[in-house]
Length: 496
Image (cartoon, rainbow, N blue to C red):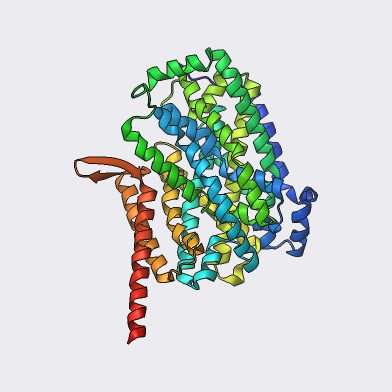
């Protein structure tokens, strides 16, 4: 096909070498724990139990936490889906940048408080915290199932990322997906949270090398950034001299950024990374330094623009970045970059599966079943569910899978975050808001064909707004209304 390059044996060998080394390092992590001095001590205290497998013994220091949180926050979504969206629709795909900027103050202000609550109470999940705060088994299950369901399409996105680069290496049929699934399964089963914590730095170093090489050498090959922006304007013309987004894209751009920021650290995997830190100060330090990743994210997004200028012509938007590297770099470096992308999916997918397994063993299954083996089986089951998402969910862009999960996980925001306020909300109000918010959000998603935005009519005009944000607004309104009603009723009963 015109504009679509192909890989050779050298690229495949380099890919297998780097990807294989990472898998081996993660699955033999028990022999490497001496590198995690602070967590190793706590792991011994936990007798290598479920807390060690699922939370790393709650002892990761600033550096390990930085790589772990960054590793499970910046995923295949970053390297594959964002450039694909930029390639398909232009500047609208850059909504991921403001969302990462919004989220760091949120981490700094909120997450240290959640860490202290979890540490003092011995909680391992958001649902644990909810159970302790509201004394409601029903609300605990609601939050646990929300996290479990929401994380499956997120893991699916990582499997798509691994499959994409393996397909670019020339493996046909379902072989790439099978490789992705079983690599992730072995990596998580044997290593627990220590596996991604150990190998996250490998992922980051490789991603940085690939991205720096791309944003430095590709523009030199294509005539410079100025020329690239001029050429890109012919593909996606600017609406006028002062705007890069058409007026119809501004509201969805802003609301998607906000809803993504609010949802980001409600997911089981991101919260697991936070709770595995050794102190609240460690969490604050990471909130200060994590914005470094946003710089890289902006550079990665521009790969979608570079693909247009380089003449990449494909209807499969998720293949944009692999084709770009194959066309403009030697095969050995393309293999290295593909391994970086695959590892960039492997590390967060492992944390996601572990976070979901924590929900199953701590909050859903009977306490008598809680064990490392149960956690391993639960994590495998979650990954199997993610595989079914890949096979049966019809999403035009891989990014839609993550945004769909965001609609679901956002409905836990009132119980987990608003519950930190001094205002006391009842568990019944929180549960009512969760039910109504999910019904509204999922109904709109289904009606819109799994799109992350919904058209709101205002008179003769309508605008596209983040579906998750709409559902969250309805959720909070129901919580407040039910709380006011309950408060008024209690005062009336007291007066009688």
